[in-house]
Image 1: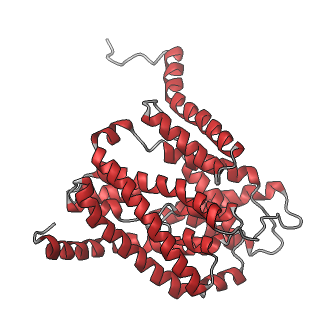
Image 2 (image 1 turned 180 degrees about the vertical axis):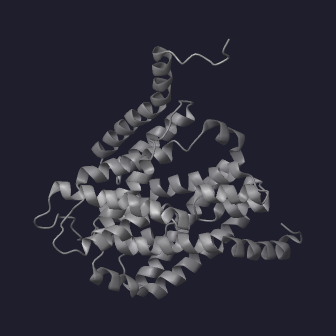
Image 3 (image 1 turned 90 degrees about the vertical axis):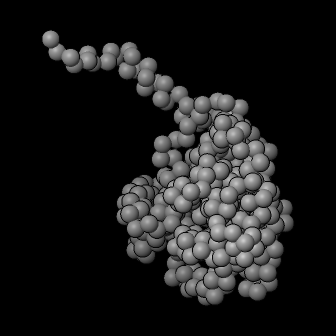
Length: 366
Protein backbone atom coordinates (compact mmCIF):
# COMPACT_ATOMS: atom_id res chain seq x y z
CA UNK A 1 0.00 0.00 0.00
CA UNK A 2 1.38 3.42 -0.91
CA UNK A 3 2.01 5.98 1.85
CA UNK A 4 1.69 8.88 -0.57
CA UNK A 5 -0.84 11.50 0.48
CA UNK A 6 -3.78 11.99 -1.85
CA UNK A 7 -3.69 15.19 -3.92
CA UNK A 8 -5.58 18.11 -2.37
CA UNK A 9 -9.18 18.42 -3.41
CA UNK A 10 -9.88 21.33 -5.75
CA UNK A 11 -12.27 22.93 -3.27
CA UNK A 12 -9.71 22.80 -0.47
CA UNK A 13 -6.95 24.16 -2.72
CA UNK A 14 -9.22 27.00 -3.80
CA UNK A 15 -10.07 27.81 -0.19
CA UNK A 16 -6.39 27.83 0.79
CA UNK A 17 -5.58 30.13 -2.14
CA UNK A 18 -8.43 32.46 -1.18
CA UNK A 19 -7.16 32.47 2.40
CA UNK A 20 -3.74 33.62 1.22
CA UNK A 21 -5.19 36.32 -1.01
CA UNK A 22 -7.66 37.70 1.55
CA UNK A 23 -5.11 39.77 3.59
CA UNK A 24 -3.73 41.25 0.36
CA UNK A 25 -7.18 42.08 -1.00
CA UNK A 26 -8.23 43.63 2.32
CA UNK A 27 -5.09 45.77 2.43
CA UNK A 28 -5.73 46.90 -1.15
CA UNK A 29 -9.36 47.84 -0.43
CA UNK A 30 -8.37 49.76 2.71
CA UNK A 31 -5.55 51.45 0.80
CA UNK A 32 -7.91 52.65 -1.94
CA UNK A 33 -10.34 53.95 0.68
CA UNK A 34 -7.56 55.74 2.55
CA UNK A 35 -6.14 57.23 -0.64
CA UNK A 36 -9.55 58.43 -1.81
CA UNK A 37 -10.33 60.12 1.51
CA UNK A 38 -6.90 61.75 1.68
CA UNK A 39 -7.22 62.95 -1.91
CA UNK A 40 -10.63 64.46 -1.19
CA UNK A 41 -9.14 66.23 1.85
CA UNK A 42 -6.26 67.52 -0.33
CA UNK A 43 -3.63 65.82 1.84
CA UNK A 44 -0.12 66.11 0.31
CA UNK A 45 1.01 62.80 -1.22
CA UNK A 46 -2.56 61.60 -0.64
CA UNK A 47 -2.25 58.25 -2.43
CA UNK A 48 0.67 57.22 -0.23
CA UNK A 49 -0.15 58.84 3.12
CA UNK A 50 -3.83 57.81 3.06
CA UNK A 51 -3.18 54.08 2.43
CA UNK A 52 -0.30 54.11 4.94
CA UNK A 53 -2.39 55.59 7.75
CA UNK A 54 -5.44 53.39 7.17
CA UNK A 55 -3.57 50.10 6.80
CA UNK A 56 -1.33 50.90 9.79
CA UNK A 57 -4.42 51.63 11.93
CA UNK A 58 -6.12 48.43 10.79
CA UNK A 59 -2.98 46.38 11.38
CA UNK A 60 -2.58 47.82 14.89
CA UNK A 61 -6.24 47.02 15.53
CA UNK A 62 -5.47 43.37 14.90
CA UNK A 63 -6.61 42.96 11.30
CA UNK A 64 -4.54 40.53 9.28
CA UNK A 65 -3.12 42.48 6.35
CA UNK A 66 -0.37 41.81 3.86
CA UNK A 67 1.29 44.11 1.38
CA UNK A 68 0.89 43.55 -2.36
CA UNK A 69 3.56 41.07 -3.49
CA UNK A 70 6.32 43.05 -5.24
CA UNK A 71 4.11 46.14 -4.92
CA UNK A 72 6.68 48.35 -3.20
CA UNK A 73 9.43 47.22 -5.57
CA UNK A 74 7.38 47.89 -8.71
CA UNK A 75 6.19 51.20 -7.25
CA UNK A 76 9.80 52.22 -6.74
CA UNK A 77 10.57 51.16 -10.33
CA UNK A 78 7.82 53.44 -11.67
CA UNK A 79 9.21 56.38 -9.69
CA UNK A 80 12.72 55.53 -10.91
CA UNK A 81 11.53 55.58 -14.52
CA UNK A 82 9.79 58.93 -14.00
CA UNK A 83 13.01 60.45 -12.63
CA UNK A 84 15.24 58.78 -15.22
CA UNK A 85 13.26 60.28 -18.09
CA UNK A 86 14.24 63.74 -16.79
CA UNK A 87 17.95 63.03 -16.37
CA UNK A 88 19.33 64.99 -19.32
CA UNK A 89 23.06 65.87 -19.50
CA UNK A 90 22.25 69.41 -18.38
CA UNK A 91 20.41 68.13 -15.30
CA UNK A 92 23.28 65.79 -14.41
CA UNK A 93 25.81 68.63 -14.68
CA UNK A 94 23.77 70.82 -12.34
CA UNK A 95 23.55 67.97 -9.82
CA UNK A 96 27.31 67.28 -10.07
CA UNK A 97 28.00 70.89 -9.11
CA UNK A 98 26.37 70.14 -5.74
CA UNK A 99 28.86 67.36 -4.89
CA UNK A 100 30.61 69.28 -2.05
CA UNK A 101 27.25 70.17 -0.49
CA UNK A 102 26.08 66.56 -0.79
CA UNK A 103 29.23 65.33 0.99
CA UNK A 104 28.92 67.82 3.86
CA UNK A 105 25.18 67.19 4.24
CA UNK A 106 25.71 63.42 4.37
CA UNK A 107 28.32 63.77 7.11
CA UNK A 108 25.85 65.93 9.00
CA UNK A 109 23.17 63.24 8.75
CA UNK A 110 25.66 60.62 9.98
CA UNK A 111 26.56 62.78 12.99
CA UNK A 112 22.90 63.49 13.78
CA UNK A 113 21.77 59.85 13.65
CA UNK A 114 24.77 58.72 15.73
CA UNK A 115 23.89 61.33 18.36
CA UNK A 116 20.31 60.06 18.27
CA UNK A 117 21.58 56.63 19.35
CA UNK A 118 22.80 58.09 22.65
CA UNK A 119 19.34 59.57 23.23
CA UNK A 120 17.46 56.39 22.28
CA UNK A 121 19.47 54.27 24.73
CA UNK A 122 18.04 55.79 27.95
CA UNK A 123 14.65 56.74 26.51
CA UNK A 124 13.90 53.28 25.16
CA UNK A 125 15.92 51.40 27.79
CA UNK A 126 17.69 49.43 25.09
CA UNK A 127 21.25 48.18 24.92
CA UNK A 128 23.80 50.34 23.06
CA UNK A 129 24.02 47.98 20.07
CA UNK A 130 20.27 48.14 19.54
CA UNK A 131 20.30 51.93 19.96
CA UNK A 132 22.96 52.38 17.28
CA UNK A 133 21.44 50.15 14.60
CA UNK A 134 17.93 51.48 15.33
CA UNK A 135 18.97 55.06 14.54
CA UNK A 136 21.31 54.41 11.59
CA UNK A 137 19.34 55.91 8.69
CA UNK A 138 19.70 52.96 6.33
CA UNK A 139 17.38 50.14 5.29
CA UNK A 140 15.18 48.71 8.05
CA UNK A 141 15.69 45.07 7.05
CA UNK A 142 19.46 45.48 6.67
CA UNK A 143 19.89 47.15 10.06
CA UNK A 144 17.68 44.57 11.79
CA UNK A 145 19.82 41.74 10.37
CA UNK A 146 23.09 43.44 11.38
CA UNK A 147 21.69 44.14 14.86
CA UNK A 148 20.84 40.44 15.29
CA UNK A 149 24.37 39.48 14.21
CA UNK A 150 25.95 41.80 16.81
CA UNK A 151 23.65 40.92 19.70
CA UNK A 152 21.07 43.69 19.40
CA UNK A 153 17.27 43.38 19.45
CA UNK A 154 16.12 43.14 15.81
CA UNK A 155 12.45 43.70 16.73
CA UNK A 156 13.28 46.95 18.51
CA UNK A 157 15.48 48.03 15.59
CA UNK A 158 12.72 47.30 13.06
CA UNK A 159 10.14 49.11 15.21
CA UNK A 160 12.23 52.29 15.49
CA UNK A 161 12.95 52.30 11.75
CA UNK A 162 9.29 51.75 10.85
CA UNK A 163 8.19 54.63 13.09
CA UNK A 164 11.00 56.87 11.79
CA UNK A 165 10.11 56.34 8.14
CA UNK A 166 6.33 56.48 8.69
CA UNK A 167 6.62 59.59 10.86
CA UNK A 168 8.80 61.44 8.38
CA UNK A 169 6.62 60.40 5.44
CA UNK A 170 3.54 61.59 7.33
CA UNK A 171 4.94 64.92 8.57
CA UNK A 172 7.56 66.13 6.09
CA UNK A 173 5.30 66.44 3.00
CA UNK A 174 2.81 68.42 5.08
CA UNK A 175 5.56 70.74 6.33
CA UNK A 176 6.98 71.14 2.83
CA UNK A 177 3.58 72.10 1.45
CA UNK A 178 2.88 74.42 4.38
CA UNK A 179 6.21 76.24 4.50
CA UNK A 180 7.86 75.49 1.17
CA UNK A 181 7.20 76.78 -2.29
CA UNK A 182 6.12 74.59 -5.18
CA UNK A 183 8.41 74.34 -8.17
CA UNK A 184 7.85 74.92 -11.84
CA UNK A 185 9.05 71.61 -13.29
CA UNK A 186 6.21 70.30 -15.42
CA UNK A 187 5.76 66.61 -16.17
CA UNK A 188 4.29 67.11 -19.60
CA UNK A 189 4.77 64.19 -21.99
CA UNK A 190 7.23 64.91 -24.80
CA UNK A 191 5.87 65.59 -28.26
CA UNK A 192 5.06 62.35 -30.05
CA UNK A 193 5.01 60.21 -26.89
CA UNK A 194 2.88 57.09 -27.28
CA UNK A 195 1.21 55.42 -24.23
CA UNK A 196 2.61 52.01 -25.20
CA UNK A 197 6.16 53.42 -25.35
CA UNK A 198 6.33 53.00 -21.58
CA UNK A 199 6.00 49.20 -21.77
CA UNK A 200 9.56 48.42 -23.00
CA UNK A 201 10.92 51.09 -20.64
CA UNK A 202 9.32 49.36 -17.64
CA UNK A 203 10.69 46.04 -18.87
CA UNK A 204 14.17 47.55 -18.98
CA UNK A 205 13.60 49.05 -15.53
CA UNK A 206 12.90 45.64 -13.98
CA UNK A 207 15.99 44.15 -15.65
CA UNK A 208 18.16 47.00 -14.32
CA UNK A 209 16.79 46.51 -10.80
CA UNK A 210 17.63 42.80 -10.87
CA UNK A 211 21.09 43.61 -12.25
CA UNK A 212 21.88 45.99 -9.37
CA UNK A 213 20.41 43.83 -6.62
CA UNK A 214 23.34 41.35 -6.28
CA UNK A 215 25.81 44.25 -6.12
CA UNK A 216 24.43 45.47 -2.79
CA UNK A 217 23.56 48.86 -4.27
CA UNK A 218 21.13 50.91 -2.12
CA UNK A 219 17.51 50.90 -3.28
CA UNK A 220 18.12 48.90 -6.49
CA UNK A 221 14.43 49.04 -7.43
CA UNK A 222 14.62 52.85 -7.60
CA UNK A 223 18.21 53.45 -8.69
CA UNK A 224 18.41 50.68 -11.33
CA UNK A 225 15.32 51.81 -13.26
CA UNK A 226 16.40 55.44 -12.91
CA UNK A 227 19.87 54.86 -14.39
CA UNK A 228 18.62 52.46 -17.06
CA UNK A 229 15.87 54.82 -18.14
CA UNK A 230 18.26 57.77 -18.25
CA UNK A 231 20.43 55.85 -20.72
CA UNK A 232 17.35 54.72 -22.65
CA UNK A 233 15.97 58.28 -22.83
CA UNK A 234 19.24 59.45 -24.39
CA UNK A 235 18.06 57.76 -27.60
CA UNK A 236 16.57 60.88 -29.13
CA UNK A 237 13.92 59.36 -31.42
CA UNK A 238 12.37 57.37 -28.55
CA UNK A 239 9.71 59.22 -26.53
CA UNK A 240 8.00 57.96 -23.38
CA UNK A 241 6.27 59.41 -20.32
CA UNK A 242 4.93 58.07 -17.02
CA UNK A 243 1.18 58.75 -16.80
CA UNK A 244 -0.41 60.18 -13.67
CA UNK A 245 -2.31 56.96 -12.93
CA UNK A 246 0.98 54.99 -12.82
CA UNK A 247 2.33 57.32 -10.12
CA UNK A 248 -0.94 56.98 -8.18
CA UNK A 249 -0.66 53.18 -8.28
CA UNK A 250 3.00 53.42 -7.22
CA UNK A 251 2.06 55.59 -4.24
CA UNK A 252 -0.75 53.20 -3.32
CA UNK A 253 1.55 50.15 -3.32
CA UNK A 254 4.26 51.94 -1.33
CA UNK A 255 1.77 53.33 1.20
CA UNK A 256 0.29 49.88 1.83
CA UNK A 257 3.78 48.42 2.24
CA UNK A 258 4.63 51.08 4.86
CA UNK A 259 1.37 50.66 6.75
CA UNK A 260 1.42 46.87 6.93
CA UNK A 261 4.86 46.92 8.58
CA UNK A 262 3.21 47.75 11.89
CA UNK A 263 2.22 44.84 14.11
CA UNK A 264 0.27 45.19 17.33
CA UNK A 265 2.26 42.41 19.03
CA UNK A 266 5.63 44.11 18.43
CA UNK A 267 4.47 47.54 19.55
CA UNK A 268 2.72 46.12 22.62
CA UNK A 269 5.93 44.33 23.66
CA UNK A 270 8.07 47.46 23.32
CA UNK A 271 6.03 50.42 24.63
CA UNK A 272 9.07 52.44 25.77
CA UNK A 273 10.81 51.83 22.46
CA UNK A 274 7.73 53.06 20.60
CA UNK A 275 7.56 56.29 22.61
CA UNK A 276 11.31 56.82 22.24
CA UNK A 277 11.06 56.21 18.48
CA UNK A 278 8.41 58.93 18.18
CA UNK A 279 10.70 61.37 20.00
CA UNK A 280 13.67 60.40 17.80
CA UNK A 281 11.60 60.82 14.62
CA UNK A 282 10.47 64.29 15.76
CA UNK A 283 14.03 65.35 16.53
CA UNK A 284 15.26 64.08 13.16
CA UNK A 285 12.56 66.10 11.41
CA UNK A 286 13.59 69.25 13.33
CA UNK A 287 17.26 68.59 12.55
CA UNK A 288 16.45 68.05 8.85
CA UNK A 289 14.50 71.31 8.71
CA UNK A 290 17.35 73.23 10.36
CA UNK A 291 19.91 71.57 8.09
CA UNK A 292 17.68 72.28 5.09
CA UNK A 293 17.62 75.97 5.96
CA UNK A 294 21.45 76.04 6.14
CA UNK A 295 21.76 74.07 2.90
CA UNK A 296 19.35 76.39 1.11
CA UNK A 297 21.26 79.46 2.31
CA UNK A 298 24.62 77.98 1.27
CA UNK A 299 23.62 76.65 -2.16
CA UNK A 300 20.63 78.70 -3.27
CA UNK A 301 18.43 75.59 -3.45
CA UNK A 302 14.76 76.10 -2.58
CA UNK A 303 14.11 75.27 1.08
CA UNK A 304 11.64 72.54 0.12
CA UNK A 305 14.26 70.77 -2.02
CA UNK A 306 16.92 71.08 0.69
CA UNK A 307 14.54 69.80 3.39
CA UNK A 308 13.52 66.76 1.33
CA UNK A 309 17.16 66.10 0.46
CA UNK A 310 18.13 65.79 4.13
CA UNK A 311 15.05 64.07 5.59
CA UNK A 312 16.24 60.58 6.67
CA UNK A 313 13.33 58.55 5.36
CA UNK A 314 13.05 56.32 2.31
CA UNK A 315 14.46 57.70 -0.94
CA UNK A 316 11.31 56.87 -2.87
CA UNK A 317 8.99 58.71 -0.49
CA UNK A 318 11.02 61.93 -0.49
CA UNK A 319 11.56 61.81 -4.26
CA UNK A 320 7.82 61.31 -4.79
CA UNK A 321 7.08 64.34 -2.62
CA UNK A 322 9.45 66.44 -4.72
CA UNK A 323 7.90 65.17 -7.94
CA UNK A 324 4.32 65.84 -6.82
CA UNK A 325 5.34 69.40 -5.82
CA UNK A 326 7.06 69.93 -9.21
CA UNK A 327 10.44 70.36 -7.51
CA UNK A 328 13.81 69.12 -8.76
CA UNK A 329 13.52 65.45 -7.82
CA UNK A 330 16.93 64.64 -9.32
CA UNK A 331 18.66 66.78 -6.67
CA UNK A 332 16.68 65.10 -3.89
CA UNK A 333 17.57 61.72 -5.38
CA UNK A 334 21.30 62.56 -5.47
CA UNK A 335 21.39 63.62 -1.81
CA UNK A 336 19.35 60.63 -0.65
CA UNK A 337 21.30 58.04 -2.66
CA UNK A 338 24.66 59.30 -1.36
CA UNK A 339 23.30 59.28 2.19
CA UNK A 340 22.07 55.69 1.96
CA UNK A 341 25.18 54.47 0.15
CA UNK A 342 27.58 56.13 2.60
CA UNK A 343 25.71 54.91 5.68
CA UNK A 344 25.46 51.37 4.30
CA UNK A 345 29.17 51.27 3.45
CA UNK A 346 30.47 52.88 6.66
CA UNK A 347 27.98 51.56 9.23
CA UNK A 348 30.56 49.34 10.97
CA UNK A 349 33.14 52.16 10.99
CA UNK A 350 30.56 54.42 12.62
CA UNK A 351 29.70 51.58 15.01
CA UNK A 352 33.33 51.49 16.20
CA UNK A 353 33.39 55.29 16.57
CA UNK A 354 30.12 55.09 18.49
CA UNK A 355 31.64 52.40 20.73
CA UNK A 356 34.71 54.54 21.40
CA UNK A 357 32.54 57.52 22.36
CA UNK A 358 30.30 55.28 24.51
CA UNK A 359 33.33 54.00 26.44
CA UNK A 360 34.42 57.58 27.07
CA UNK A 361 30.95 58.65 28.20
CA UNK A 362 29.75 55.57 30.10
CA UNK A 363 33.07 54.00 30.98
CA UNK A 364 32.06 50.55 29.73
CA UNK A 365 32.34 48.76 26.36
CA UNK A 366 29.26 48.36 24.25
